Amino acid sequence: MKNTNLNRLTVTELEIFDKLAKAYAYNNIPIIMADYTPQRGGILSEFVASGGRAYMAGGSNGQQFFKNIPQFTTPYDTYLERDPNEIENIVATLPIGIVDDKFATFNYDAVGDMVWTKTVQKRLGGRVVAASEQSFREYFEEKTNLLDILKGAGLTQYAIPSTVIRNSKPLGDIQSQIMYNKLADASGRIVVQKCGEGMTEIGGGGSTEIVSTYEEFKEIVTADRPCFLKVSQFVAGSNSNLSLTVGNTVPSETMLGATKNQLLPDENRFTGEVLEPLQERARALGINESNIVVNVQPATLKVVGDPELTPGATNGVGNQLNYKFNPEILDTIYEIGQKLGTFMALCGKVGMCGLDLIITKEGQVYINELNDRQQGPTESASLNNEANGLPGILRESFILNYADLKKPEVVNYLTEMNERSREIYDASTQIPSPFYIKVCAKEDCFSMADLSAGDYSVTRDEQGEYTWNLEQDKQLEEMPSVDITEPETTVRINTCSAKEGDFVPEGSQLLRINGIATSETAPFEINEEGLSVLAESWLDPIRALYQQTLSTTQTANMNISSLTQPVEAQGFEQ
Image 1 (cartoon, helix red, strand yellow):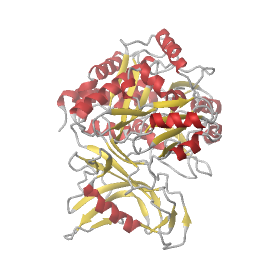
Image 2: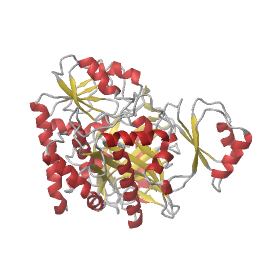
Image 3: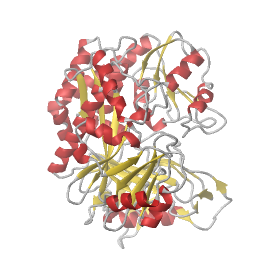
Image 4: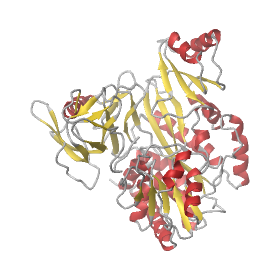
């Protein structure tokens, strides 16, 4: 049932977005997107569907993530490329002449100091009139800085007890023993994260190690290393993603969109001393508590390291969006999002950001990481809100970055979004919401079938045996509602392009399952130990899927393939 009270604001949001796309088309302003964050581009595809024009650069030969966005590719795969030095090669695929005299850029996963925008302008010429890029990510996502940021936001009570080693010197035996005794839990577990200067973020849990003994800990911290270390108490609990959008209603003096602050090139990216001058510059730009915008999306229930789906203890394997935690936890999560969002907005941040949370069995909420970017679940959560008559924070973020904030209707919409943030948040927890399940190889194996993205039936016979019918794509227009306990249900499978005989290395993703679920039919749950895990009702179906699709024995001519990149951007990802 649609929320009629908020439906008018949702209609206004959609109307502003539609007018924005048509205005860009009328003024011949295309938006240029990087391919290395393709799942973040759904909103840009909608922009094109509303009349706008966009292009994407990069990707493997002939690839096209969005049917309505022309994509200029390279002979090799650039999908996961994060190296600023490689961006010039990606941008070189863009044909000269696609830009007249004005253009905008789209990149919610910024690399460096506006590297994407500067490189596109160098290639195509013209004037940049709007951009979602900002230079904050390398600071706010740096693990070294998290405690300083939480202190500034008034959120220290939600910080995991930690010590940051802000140098690359190996620890001595006595230092190691003291630190281990201080932070290890009753079982001896402790978390060590590589961070700071000299660390190239690996992602996907690759920079994090959970050790269980002092000997393992000592081996890491006393060894030579090129980077800093963050050592934290191990916190057991359910995992969660919290997404929010922040900004202000001060029109940019140089481009469309809200006023953006930037880190200065010579400012140290690994110290809390940057925060005060950053906020001083934001105040000088006219940003203050009377004109900031903060909207918090309800948190997800995220599953990490479930052995039914992955061999990796730190690998995220699923999310249930807008999870209905108990009221006290929902209140705490909103408070965290509001305080963090306010702090980042007052630093001059504009756009998407989020947090990784851990919620203990006792209900204590901890902040594990800060993500200064659009998170994977955000797009589907926003679209699901709109389908239920609620505004979406992803579209709000797009408007903050690309609209003309000199127009009263835009400012009035953003102001109302900020004023009704809690109302939108509460309403979002009451609607059925999307989920995804990542199915990863639990050992080196081979695909037993030709698999591709689509909508497929899952059936359960009278004996309770499950069968995945992966040959007939139903091609549904909307995301299917899934109840795995029914004799037949439909799921959406994406980020999948496997042929029979393909080699699937241990830990790599085979496919991703998507759908809509209520709290009663969700594929994930919190167990008696307070951990987020695959729901009991999904155990047999998932085991049947593994039996149908993967084998440790080669069944056809082997084809070495990573199987980790999407063939079509649909649904959502982590």
